[in-house]
Amino acid sequence: MELFARINAWINRGTEALLAILGIAMAVVVAVQVVCRYLFNHSLFWSEEVARYLLVWLTFLGAAAAYYRRAHPGIDVLSAWLGPGWRRVKAMAVHLVCLGFFAVLIWQGAIFSHFVRLQISPALALPLWLVVVIIPVAGVILVCHCLLFLCRELRETGDDR
Image (cartoon, rainbow, N blue to C red; front, top):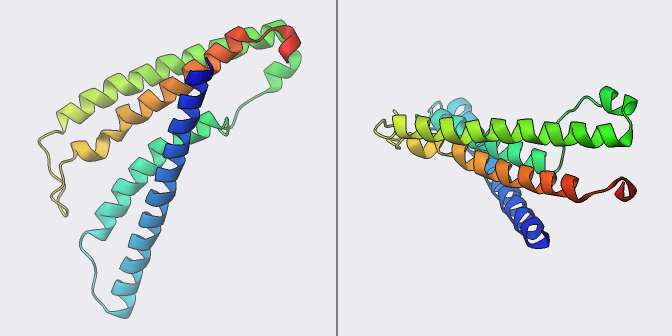
């Protein structure tokens, strides 16, 4: 369990580092495009496509990092009304539903990546599967985090809270 927790922490650190790099890259690309367009009256034909693809990657990796940090918005009105035992049942049910959703994300993301494998982006001539492969990759990261949370929930007793 501790090894799995360390692996998840390592995965999240890598994800967050990649998020920082991608975010900076997107900001630089957009800023350079604005400067080129308004100061030099010359638009970069590839900048909008790069920014769009970076945003796709930022979205899916950001969802994984936010899930690990439990930063997604939640509704806890129901939890406040439940006793400790029912809160635990609710938490495990939520993790199981999330696990199902993440499995669908992997499955359908892999299908979609395969579907677009021969398509090429218009400006960059980049294979589109490189853009959408982040969907199943993020799904795998999310499954790892979800399994960790589910294992922790199963190991906890009422005294641990």
